[in-house]
Image (cartoon, rainbow, N blue to C red; front, side, top):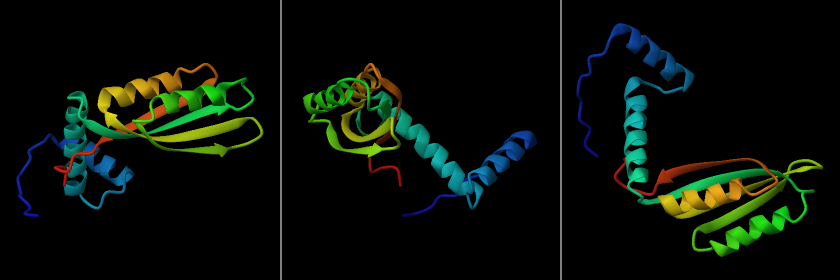
Length: 137
């Protein structure tokens, strides 16, 4: 892969804040951080264009809630074309977490995640998605 160098002029205060960001995130240098920022923006554009994405959804819920596990499983089965894998973890006496790997068009993935998160009895859920694009080296 050929690297291209370019210069960027930014105000001193913004540069100090960016350097602090780089330190907090443990980047080795500005270039690595800038590359990640660019990739993140390109991925967001791809997601908005409803391209194929892969997502990790986590759901935290009380396993004592009546029929909740069955409802969550049923939703996943109804959308088996999107669900690649799931893992169920018993956190403590009351709480379980379900981690679900989903792949498909961005809007379909978001819709399934929203349905699962909105299921009565789910305490918290969050979807993290990324593009499956290969042009993000």
